[in-house]
Length: 66
Image 1 (cartoon, rainbow, N blue to C red):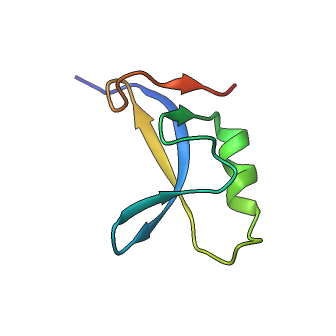
Image 2: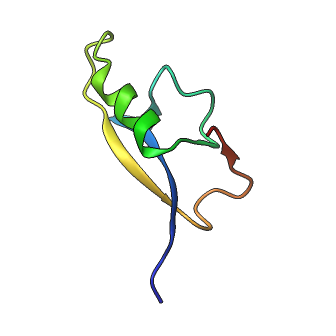
């Protein structure tokens, strides 16, 4: 069974796990691809972020920001 992508987040890896991009409201928020790409393009805090695909069921009560 193929999983369905429902949105994206922008994160970076740290010693304590993942850290969300400062422009994200919270870890339960999900963004569309254009919004996530805009966050990736913003390198004002000099950290390396990556796009994280969010699949159905990954987040219990997601908030869609689009």
